[in-house]
Image 1 (tube, rainbow, N blue to C red):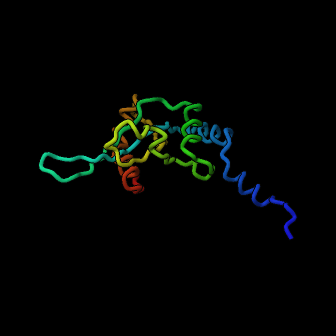
Image 2 (cartoon, one colour; image 1 turned 135 degrees about the vertical axis):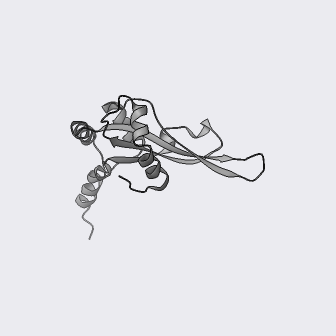
Image 3 (spheres, rainbow, N blue to C red; image 1 turned 30 degrees about the vertical axis):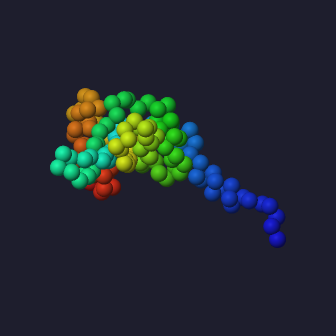
Amino acid sequence: MDTGNNTLSKEIKNALTLTDKQIEDHFNHMCKAGYDPLLCMDRSFRFIPPEGGMQVRHRTQFVDRIITIERYKDLLKTGGVKDATLLDDIIFLPINTIVPEQINPAMIGGIAAVFWLRPSGCRTLGQMYKKYEKKITDELRNKIITK
């Protein structure tokens, strides 16, 4: 007999709902631990060389914008991150939340992520990207964990 008591489903729903407080706590924790967020993306493009055929080229880059707590909340919410257990040192996001699909019709796919990186010795986001470029590229293209 169904009594209409859905406490279990409410508990599951609450566990899969990421609150502003959880996002703020994660942001503050990572910043206090000495990490800075860097938004990076890898996009795949169709390319037809003069010789004919079709090739795929990748372009990995960072977004040259400082991520504030408000921007961080916006990225996670528009990126569809709903589970607090997904808040880690790398948070993957759909590429279409960062770059609109109609910007380049040759783009066939991509992925974006917020990387929490140690900025030691880096004065700019560009320097931080260069320092961790191999790790970022490996993670975005292959999801290979590198240190």
